[in-house]
Length: 107
Image (cartoon, rainbow, N blue to C red):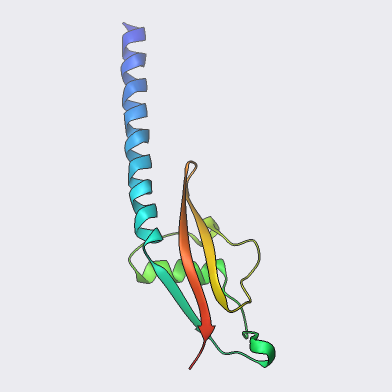
C-alpha cells in the first residue's frame, strides 16, 4: 500500500511540475511578444549616458503586469549601446524567455 501511495504522490508531483512549466512557457510567449523601447540621452559618438540594467528590464515588465525578480533577468553586462538587443529571462529551470530591447536616442 505504501508503494501505491508513493506512486500516486509522484504522479501528482509530476503533473504539478508539468502544469507549472506550461504556465511559464505561456508567460515566456507573452514576454517574447513585447518590445522594450528605452530612450536615453546620448553624448559624443552616440554613446548613451548610463546603461540599461536588469533592474530597468524588471521595472518595464512590472509596468506590463508581469512580476519578475531582477535577478532572473540575464544581462551579462549593462547594455551601453544604441540599437536592438535581446535580453534573456530565466523563468523556470527549463524555460527561458527572450525580450527584444531597443535603445534609442531620447527626443
